[in-house]
Image (cartoon, rainbow, N blue to C red; front, side, top):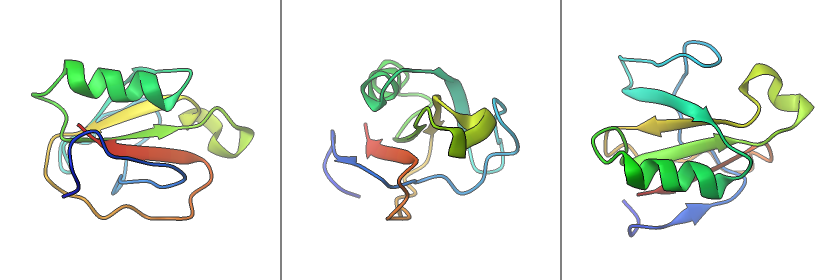
Length: 93
């Protein structure tokens, strides 16, 4: 796990969301809401340490469809970001 506060641009640390706006209890991913930037998602992670070890934010692009601007918090120590994802950013609380 990288140090606290790490941000990786153009990467995703999500395994699988069930659907836009929905939580995935199996992977302990919570959709906390929509934010204008990854900074908002990062702040939401810090504000909810019970729900968040890492976060992934979906950029507001047409490629993201209904996931656009959504922020997912992950409550486990899983860290294996998929790189070269121009539609998402991720980080560590």
